[in-house]
Image (cartoon, rainbow, N blue to C red; front, side, top):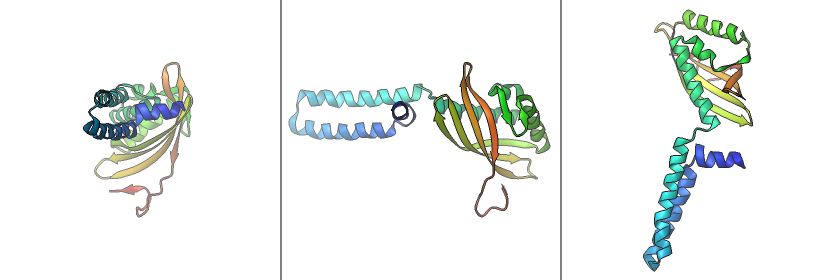
Length: 187
């Protein structure tokens, strides 16, 4: 129930706002025919409520939205080679196929230099929340130097809520199946 309320009010308020709009149109029609004071009040209150919902959705950052924002920040830190900033998002107990926290950061740094990474764009990031743990399936487009081209990459990123905020506890690279593309590279 709380997940439904969080999604309705904070992450995707559009259906609620549209429903309020439909109700408002019905009140306009009723007011046009009856001109009652209660209907006039409803015509004022409904837009105020809709505005409040929109403002709340804009001002409140949900855990899902925070993870999406953190993922974009990680991509920027990777692009810019800011390894200590990138490390701030990794849990002390972090593990990946490349090793633990420091080993993974060193491998990422080496990969960036070796493959001459120009940019990393997050194409999609689907986050599933499970209490204080989240699983994020993300797709990224990695642009290398002009000679190498572009590569689509898919990752499973597992997050845990710690005292210091959401931290990555594990990362796994996924194989991408892109129909019509040889391998996973395209230009």
